[in-house]
Image 1 (cartoon, rainbow, N blue to C red):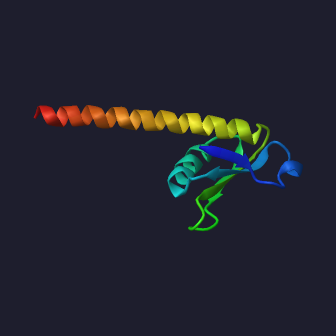
Image 2 (image 1 turned 90 degrees about the vertical axis):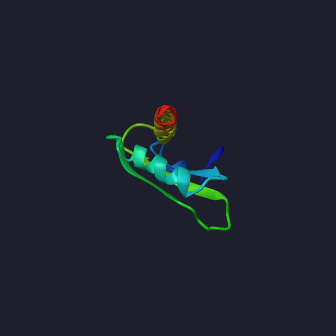
Image 3 (image 1 turned 120 degrees about the vertical axis):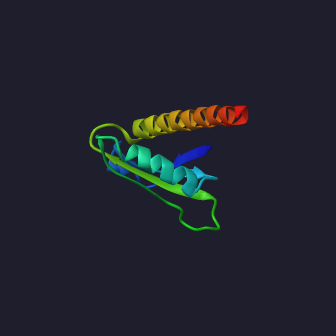
Length: 100
């Protein structure tokens, strides 16, 4: 996954940033947005896919005090935990189903 900052954010401070994810879309954007929006230190979190023909997603974070990059890292780690839990639960249920 390649991530870069959207040019022009330098003047808005470390707590407000827009990141550009290459080769990503609504699948990652919506899941990550749902997780990060639950953080108390986040004022706004959202994403957009600028054009369906482009394979990129813009992801915006506006926080009170914590740098946006730290929030993004925490969100990605928490999303990984959710995915790991979902896979573990799915595999457990498949094993249970196959025993019947």
